[in-house]
Image 1 (tube, rainbow, N blue to C red):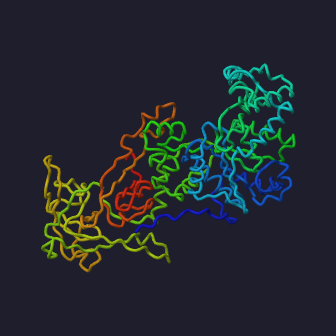
Image 2 (cartoon, rainbow, N blue to C red):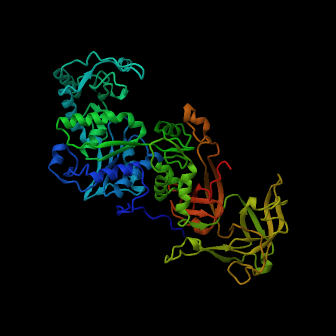
Image 3 (cartoon, helix red, strand yellow):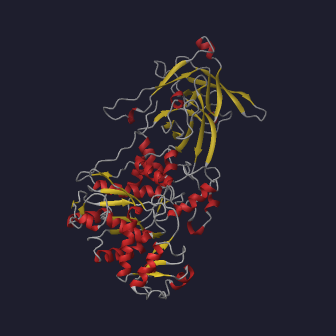
Length: 610
């Protein structure tokens, strides 16, 4: 019986000297720790505001990072890299990583996504518990403070209410070659703007009729500083706050405030947010000036996002695949979502290994999908129990079986190790051996028989001798039966007595090859889903290409196979190495004992495109 990866538990903090290979983010953290940059922080429990934290004790966490997903979809492999990075760095430097839901867009968010994100982070092996507290937060926890901050910015002359149309604001914003034009509402007094903001809050104006904008610089070469919108009117029921609010903060306004209130020290995000960093810094500086936040504020640092070949990570495009029924849901094993990778058979350890192996850089690059598969093979090599399965079966009849053993109904037990000896660590108890029967009829792979063998072919052909792995040596006598199309439906051979594996006569006859097989006597029929890469193009949506045209028509083939009893007894989500074929997993959703369903995770080696 297979024993797969146990429930993955969060790793303890790394001891001094156990830090992983250095990168620029680790260097930043180590520099700040050496300089005591954030040593003056105070912590008084759950985040509230700066005054609350000023009354607390010195922060027990050396650093604080955060993973801030928007609950508007399922997380994908790119998010997995960010999870491993943020939680891993906090773990390694005696800190804590907060899980925070940036739920500022109520029209696209749902508790289904909240629950899926929580499940994904836990499955990957991380937790947000530290120092006796649960560090799970949501942007909506801070809506009251954010609104108070907005009023402060208005009163200080740093924000105004704009009543231009969306199109007018777009045109007046300018572009990279032309500065923006001041809004005609930009010169309103703070009192006028405050009155308008409160009217927005109180629902006195229609959706889209006005927005609150930061007053910065309409001529800035960074377009993100040309008076960005920070609040908009949006009558939508929020999954957490209900109908309390009809105005909601923009993400770029909410995010730095969330970081500051949670005492985040290092705010790591991908390179597309690099141009937003000046606004991040501007906003926190203004709020610190007003005494709403304490110094030092968090700092934002950017790293390159994950670009993985043969994969797309756009939420919109992944949703299109689901809703256009190009795949069978968000957890389709071909999808790069975390739920899809999990159902495919990936392990938390393999994904953590992948994230560590590809490292962290400041420049975009493409990572070959084979790197991810290689990490999985490395993780499963010494974990996944072996078993034999025949994926393209043809029946092999041992025609002299009854003569040798006195009865055509005679069967014998064969045994094979569940794991190779080399996979068993010193002092570890070997798992029980697999036991399966051999009899007159067995299933073999169709490709293991050739009437006229090609040069170098060593398996079954008339007159050739091979071993049934773990069983007897046999001599092929040829095709026993064919259908109307001339396709072989039965292969015949003779069993050579006293050659059973593990007996004194096992080496008495030299066989040119050993082939896998499953006995008709105790083999179990199984559905096997042969998954492959979803796209044929290594960069399916690069340069504006239509990614739908790059879909691989052979990304899923379903076959009826036969598996040995140890595989048939698998529990959902158990992983195996099907000898010769690769790594497979009992499907989490559809597999049942008695009606087995297996997914191919990956082959034994990378053969894509070869």
